[in-house]
Amino acid sequence: MQFCSILSVPLFSSEFYIVIFIVLSILLGGLVFVLRSNKLQQSTLPTNIPDKIDSTFKSKISQPKLVNAIVEWCIHHIGDKQNQPNIQISYHPHRKKYGCYLIDKKLIRIYIKNHKSVETLALTIIHEFVHFIEIKTDKESQNYARLQQDFGYQTNPYERSANRIADQYYQQCLMDLSAKGYLINELPLT
Image (cartoon, rainbow, N blue to C red):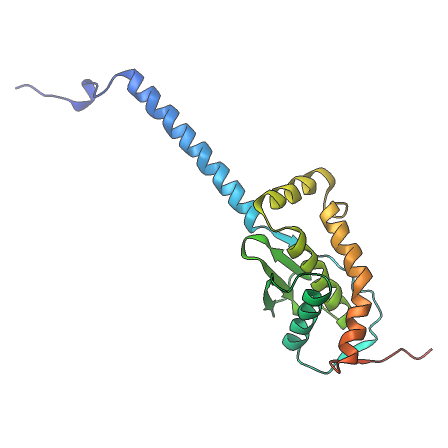
């Protein structure tokens, strides 16, 4: 009786297996690159705005309407009317963020429960809107990520720009919304 073992007969030469190994390694490396690139495109850009601002405004409209009113103000005063972000309001608090901008979806997400004042809500929305304006392409997204690595979050030029513009415009935004009757300006008693 004769036994034939498949393992004893080589199916292919050793060069074939080396080529297969190299091809699979290249494909795996490409997959890792694509996943990392996709992660950068889908990453969120956090907003850490302190809630230490004295609240002088109270909303006369619902939170979703107020968010939309602030975004509309941003479109007319900071951005262009042709290009508008998608807006999502999350009613689940985030541990650290007030809002974020999801680059790949052109989506501004606002964590509404994290805001203790109308002022911080306006600061957050304007901040995220600036990201929407400044980070539109994959190249800009990758530049943001590189700067984040080089400088960290607080000193990233994109974050500094968004903070500067939010600080510059949020009071005017609130005054304009107050003039439209959306807000009541309740100055603190001194």
